[in-house]
Structure formats: structure tokens, C-alpha cells
Amino acid sequence: MDYDTYGSNAVELAIHLANVERDGEWAAAFLRAHDEWFTPQTALDLSPAESRRAAATADLVRAVALAGSQAEVLERLNELLALARPHPYATDHDGELHLHYARPDAPALEQLTTTVAMGLSQVVVQHGWQRLGVCSAEGCDDVYVDTSRNASRRYCSNTCASRSTVAAYRARRKA
Ligand SMILES: [Zn+2]
Ligand SMILES: [Zn+2]
Picture (tube, rainbow, N blue to C red):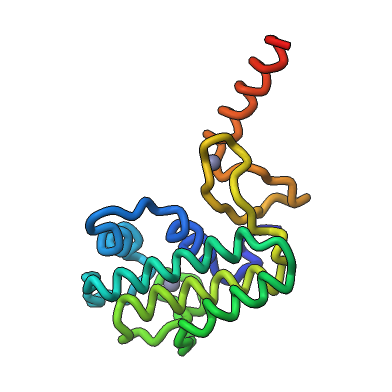
């Protein structure tokens, strides 16, 4: 499985949103850090109410990743999709033909929610809900999307994977 077959890597945006630390002006900071996902000229400021809605979207992405059955995934995914206002259009703004999911003149929150919901559901529908998971490293609860060929991923990052390998090695030596 590789990202080219997604048609979009919007799922990465969903994963980043689910994992972002939420304090202070986190929502506006998140939008700015991912500004390539928004149409130029989109105002990347969110009201406190909009920030709470962005947090609700993040919670739903996490809930989808944590779900333990297909029925649970469907319920949570559909809750997330209900927040989306898809208005897809094709573009080649970066030199490659691809789809954007939200109206180009939609407010930032609408672009965010729609892109995240559509990107995530695309992956779940095409590649299976088991592709989403939560990090197995101790003390980390970040979620991830597993793009490995044999769906064998267990950690959110290489950092967590090697941290856990070292911990397991020490535990074995002690034993
Ligand atoms: Zn694009
Ligand atoms: Zn981790």
C-alpha cells in the first residue's frame, strides 16, 4: 500500500489533528503549521467556539482509530462525516492532479473538518479500519495510520518503536 493510491494523503492531516497537544491557542497554531491544506487567503484564525469544534473533530478521529469493531468504526466515522460539508473539486495547483474536498472559499474550520473527515473515511473504506491504531509504546497514546505493506505497524513513530525495542532489550537482560 502506498500513498499514491490514496489519491490524497489527507489522512495525515487527520492523524496530526488527533495527536496535537491542545493548550492555549493550539487550534490556530495547528492551522498555521498545516497551512498548505487551506486555500490561499483563508483566514486561519478560529473563534473559541470554532476551536472547540476543531477539538471535537480531533476527538472523533481518535475515536475512530481506537474503535475495536467495524460497527463502532462506522458509527464514529459517520458522526465525523456528519460534520463535513464536502464540495470536491479537482486541482493541479502543486503540479499534480488531485482532489480537494472542501469548497475553496469555505471558512478554515469547514475546510479542516471536511478534509479530515473525507481523508480518513477514504482510507477506512479503501484499506480497512484495522489500518488505524494507537501507539503500543509505554506512555504514548498517539494514533497512527498503518501504511506498511503487511499492516504490521504498532507504533506512532520510529522514536516510539526504537524506545520500545530498547526497553524490551533491557527487560530481557534483567530477566
Ligand atoms: Zn492540494
Ligand atoms: Zn508513540
